Image 1 (cartoon, rainbow, N blue to C red):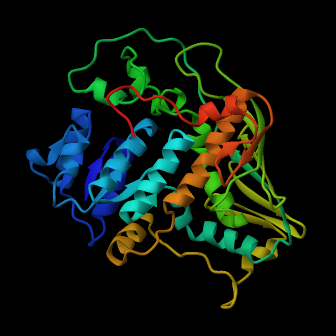
Image 2: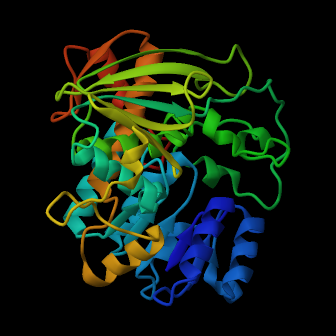
Length: 386
């Protein structure tokens, strides 16, 4: 395996793969020389196994699979390049920065027969799977509403340009994003305690709605059996920063209506607790790792041998490795990843448009709304393109 993006999340994922006897680390890549060198040492690799340009790493014949753990605006470009180079791909969430990007990645993966896993690893938790099986098997009656609480965005002041540090290839970090002056608050700062780019739309178009919320939408789709579709109506309202470097939504409320009559209500955690609650005609279940239910007896239910059993995994990384060997479908393949991510991106568009939007999940276009359709893609900075 080779690893593209080895900051905190990327190195953490690499260490998870190192714990498996089925994976051998052979290369690391990052535009941050400090992160690159740190990951190289952890993996016990020679200096020549560390790269600044992921395309050079992907040219290695001994790389069978790649993990992509870059900022969001790089996910699809790196994953597409890996698939086209004949590598299987484990890509961190959210899948893409736009819906058009996500569809392009799905088509590339299908065309090349790539084994693909999306980093929505909550699916590999037993409690999450159990709750979704309860819902799928009618234990709460007819599913009516799914309520999600997900963390809010963040704001900051304006930050003046700084000299680009010698350890960072900033032009390559920007990649397809617009050219902007460097500040550590655009990239990452330890004082902030979070990757700052999550809250800047040039790099994370829908902000924390997709960056964090995709985990929760993914659980909702799994439980309601909507993994291969999307909502038909979206509306929402949110509070955005009043100036400063960060420009994505802070607090928000979104409603997604599906063709089967189920509604997902997704809010920031100032309005609902962090997690996913499935409300049915005969009770409710809640999860985000831990579980709760009403009636409480639901927690002691057993799923019978003839009932619906969802894909079982104890490790997201091991599930990927198993599928690389067998060429089977992973727990979160590309189309499933695209649908959960695109739902979040639709939420971001609805928050910006400030009105109800109607969506065709088959054609992946808005109904009679060319203005909204223009937000499904964006121009990449040359020379980068799909």
